[in-house]
Length: 200
Image (cartoon, rainbow, N blue to C red; front, side):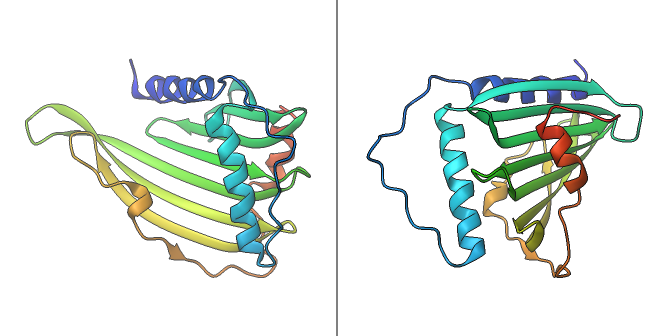
């Protein structure tokens, strides 16, 4: 199977694996107060959404489109709490390059956090002489408040299919200064993706 098909099949598997049995929240469960620091508030929202994703309590649907522009193929998974989208994963790519955007929303439907991962992979020969792949990743984290980016973190790393690679979460991020008016780069497409519209 081609690597592109393998990547998309893997993403679909992840989406379906997240659709486990629902665990209702306790009616008396206390909701912690919102932190005064917007970054802490974003982290709290992210953690809450990730918890229900991990528990399999959100409904997921998928959309796959072949686009006639440089983005290539789009694979979109939307995770719903009732009729509200709480998280989306949008993967676009063609050839040996993919971009995956993981978008997290608060209960009002506002984007609060995005992890954008760019991957470029190339065929190489492993040390043992076997055909293999080497990938370069760039992970960019966007903290969003009031429609603008208030914090941006970036890290770049490489992985080899044959190697014992370090956990990317253990690698340091570099903080990038952003203008006060900076918006999330794909903000113009987020509303369409939430509604299941794809403009290719």
